Image (cartoon, rainbow, N blue to C red):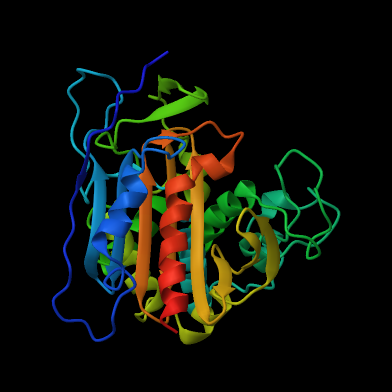
Length: 347
């Protein structure tokens, strides 16, 4: 068992001097935001990077001091360019690749997936569409297992569904997933994001039981990249939100479908709408498009608030004991709660 040291935390922040609209971070006292991460009564330590941005301008950031939880082990400090596996945040990127193929006329969202993946013919005795993969209404839990639900009826979260979407875009584009994704990331100015193995990822750990951490060295198999394996940074994820929501990366029609409710997901935040790779929620007049991620060694949250053009990013290099997701995502939820409170108070 690895004993955790007391994380020495340092605050790195900047306030944008002039903004066309006031950001949610700017109207929060920086000390209030910092106190979320330094609270002695928190159920666990924070280990990673947190960012709030207005547009492309980072208005608040916080990093824990070291990537290592082992006393005396020499490890790099976290910076805004530290790469993390972003887990299920990968899904919205895969969804965007699918929609870009739709915009090119190469994918029909309502076509059966067997139109693109012929090897699935006869696998399940029903029609499953590309759209149902995107909004987790396919019922697929694994290629070699019966469907969990009737397609189109019930939300059933499916990593396999998104891996199949990765196969579909490879088929329709004639390019491998890594190349297709890298072209999109380059267009978005995401210089430190990729869909391939990166040996410079943050040192990572998994909490087997509360307080018992083990170092993780095994990478996620490449076949899981479309659902959970893309590598990115806090800085690049801010750029991603801008590229996805405020550029011509997707047609207006495709973007609208991506952020429109197609299903309902039960979540610790309550019932959330689900579009294509994005959770959709609203507190009063505040819209939020978000997702979280959990894979062995990493957890992540990315939220976007379109009315104020605000992004929230949290990336950690420890997959905390999964029996209590409120504890796992404690800092993520606390920072979100503060941003929503400020937004609601200022409406």
